[in-house]
Length: 165
Image 1 (tube, rainbow, N blue to C red):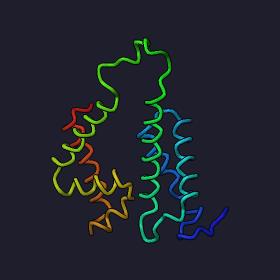
Image 2: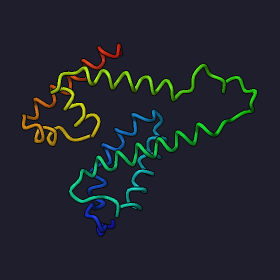
Image 3: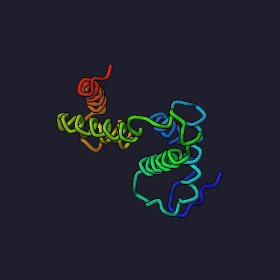
Image 4: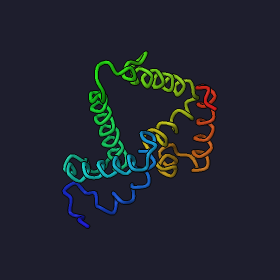
């Protein structure tokens, strides 16, 4: 394995983040093959663009950003590629999928903002940025158990606010 990248992250650090990347990829895909492909493409891009990584920043957050951007790019490309002709009835929906996702995203954003401040902070740190419970606890100056309970309560409250069963 190569550990001589110019900006200070090693292959070992990439491998440490592999489970988190696989977990994050499950938010975008259900298929194991698609998940593996997205993780592999993310790691390849991270290695290819290692010079753009800023030392002192969170490697996991940087990798998540690469993954999110990779997925969005693939999604945009797949929307442009239409299988079938112009008369294909399946291609005519009442609204494009992006509108549905946009609406759900707005609903989620409103629900997160409706949470108490302590819950909102841990949702951002743990669920959005992908930080570990330990790192989030250090940033918030609280015990790790407090972070775990806040994340659990925040998830429960979000499911109530979004009417998710």
